[in-house]
Length: 241
Image (cartoon, rainbow, N blue to C red; front, side):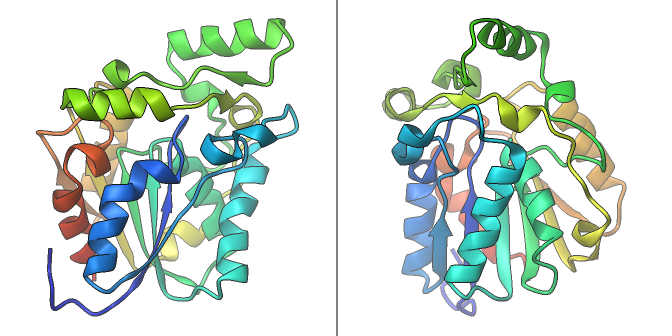
């Protein structure tokens, strides 16, 4: 951690099946360094799982992020996305231009204009979605710690005890991205290759080839580096200045 770094505001957006709980260790480290931290739980997940509904869409989750900026009077924030959260953050930035000074995508999707989450799901995930829809359900199972490649057994047990269902509707709508994301001056992509995902590998390659992005690879982490190595991830986020 960089103890002498200027205090900043971080907004942390979780991935599929996750909630604010997943950011706990990272958020604690950032707060100890004097930063203001907002770790979100998106509608229908974790402590908001009682709100699960077939009406939850990507727009619902985008509005979750926009609203935290509005009601907490957030300006000049570093907005951090994990995994599925990349869809949410990409959409939210379009409504927060000028209020986001840096973006960090942590093993996250970086969608292009007009893409749907469903189109980038793997075969197993698509089958889960279709089976759940056929049963008239509003959600599918969240990922297991084994699938996420959580590195320590104690952390794996904690993750499995906290993962909740993921709303189906968030994957079905196309994201609209006129270009605000690319105008954010500081952008970081963090890859954790112990988690196999060809779509995310392609995102990393795209970012590495783009001078507008910084990249980092955390070779010792699974898909959740905020759990496997929160101190290392915190250092990368603090260096995004």
